[in-house]
Length: 450
Image (tube, rainbow, N blue to C red):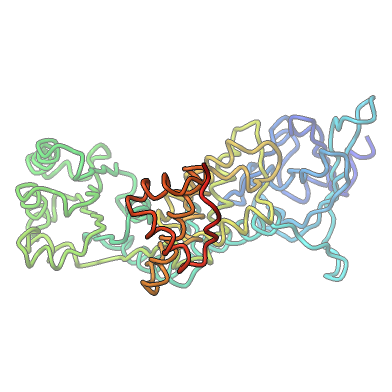
């Protein structure tokens, strides 16, 4: 009863990370009542919105060492239901079972942050988790975005362009190599715009049959104008790899972008990995469509051009796999993180997500170790470490021929078990020439064996 009513924030988790205790102090510190939190499971994730119960649960997760019987403390930004997160320090203590070995529960107390001199150095896992939480909070405040990770300067410029695009109805062309997140940003533009309550309809121009795309475009044009604001009507059409669309499909899309079609109320967003200018010059891409699409162009960078985002992105993908999972992986070991940091990521965000997904599935503990990274990653890392094959350099021809001749003579003699006549026959030269050449090469002639 004393702990339950204490103004000092204390909580308790059972072995399944469910909240058993959330005392009066926790209620005051977070703005959430105990009944909102009790019984819920704390997961090692980072929430984009700090004004949720899930955000509170995320900071209650004990470090892995506590579940192995070691007390620990961890700095956090404690969320509040109506206010801004506040820096706090959580002390965790393991509570052992009757066998004095198994950790049955964890008790936590939330205290004010001590002076910097008393702070313990963070592990790689703790550092990346803290960076991700701080970055998501900053992006939420600045851009209102909860599901984007962007710290690098080049990505800050992309977010500024996204914000401009969200305030218009103009078509948008997203460019960049495969795997850089073009569709993700197209969705962000649509759902952050005035038409965001209406459906976002994607098409893959390499895979979707032409007749299906034309059917949807025809249906939009034939519907009465008064239905433009219907919540069932598409608010945006996204054409991935639009450069692969056949000419007749390009013509239909261009017609949708004509000025007198504004009343249709459907926005066009497109993505491409190609540079369209030479395709227009070669008459492989419709000039009218190109001119109408390039009103607002957003170029997405390679992952290797935004390495400041690599750590938060890797931690984000990892924590997303913790949601609803019995397996909770806190982060990366120093050795694993060093390998991820040095890899060039030719497949960009898509490759990073695949690697983290596989590593989370392979993990056997609370951290990703180098051996948990998938085989394909290691093979790719080795290939980049070795670099391209070296071109052979010419060597002096006389020395090379002399080496080859010596090796072949020694092989013939060994094969013939010392019988020089037989060795000469194997080399298809007279025995006298064999003796003479052996003397020139400095080889021991010995005696002819019988």
